[in-house]
Length: 385
Ligand SMILES: Cc1cc2nc3c(=O)[nH]c(=O)nc-3n(C[C@H](O)[C@H](O)[C@H](O)COP(=O)(O)OP(=O)(O)OC[C@H]3O[C@@H](n4cnc5c(N)ncnc54)[C@H](O)[C@@H]3O)c2cc1C
Image 1: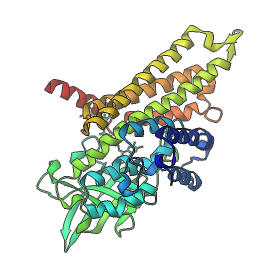
Image 2 (image 1 turned 90 degrees about the vertical axis):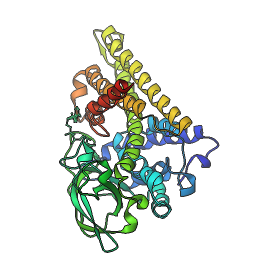
Image 3 (image 1 turned 45 degrees about the horizontal axis):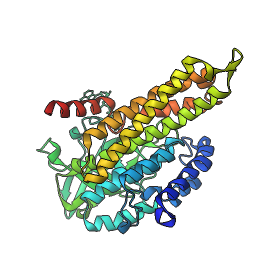
Image 4 (image 1 turned 180 degrees about the vertical axis):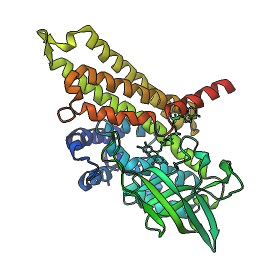
């Protein structure tokens, strides 16, 4: 595995990730299918350049990139299909971060070095049929048995469930407490008897990313599986991971926007109608210019959040909500304009990447907190003053 320390500077590492994105990941996007997922050689390439470990400290074998560096890297690798990112996203922001901030030293030693190299895939199991945006309503429960716990429940829409080596599972440990304080987090190895994973369903986009139901039927784990050895901090641990991931999603929206803008600008330059390139028409120029300006604003918001994160050590929750809201709404608008600029070609699945990129982009307004949830978070903070 390589990382910034194998290069003269972070900028050289960034250039190597850009090169991987442009010369390996993009040309192989057609191989990302529901059946194949992210093929083994491409997963190896992601591991080899260290992307599973960008946020994990060097002490645990990771690259220990600052949040600003993580965001700059994300702008690059998400100019290729965002399905590549989904292969390691559940390990970096969501699962490893919760272990890092809330786990015991033994849990950190056991999981983080393997996660940093990509040898261990973490999968984040919070959402349930009756607990989506309202994650605190979760019903999965963990009961004390002998010297451990038995877990019962149903999780859904869990990314990388078939690839997972360990699930971070949020479960209610105090059935009398229906608030967040009744929820704890557990590290459940995927091969634990009683854990089963459903077939990946067909989705609107993100083909190659596997997002499944996961069932826990009397899944027995030792006491040491309770994150931090403490009951009641499960939703806090989840939120720590989610806020990290939200900023990564905002940065992903920027990377995907850059790609869409590149595709539509190239087309506007070369496609001729009425005796001239369509890029000469003012209405096409307006779509290009609006897209570029909105992407630049989304990029600046991400960097501003990342710098605050790095400077304060505190998580700028509300600013991250704005970056996620603005970035995800922006990339959807840009995807729609890209279809328009390409005309009929923008509607042809087999002839252009634009339909696929547009379908992929629709997800960003739904997961890691839907747009309405971000709006509510921002507005509540404003009203609180
Ligand atoms: C491809 C994909 C991958 C995912 N990966 C994971 C994963 O790895 N792990 C995991 O735990 N989860 C995962 N999820 C789940 C995802 O986080 C949830 O889908 C999301 O939080 C929304 O929950 P829901 O689908 O139940 O929608 P609901 O919460 O039922 O929302 C339905 C609609 O109601 C709106 N709404 C809800 N509450 C409010 C409110 N208070 N005010 C205004 N409007 C509201 C929503 O914005 C939305 O428009 C994934 C989802 C998808 C689609």
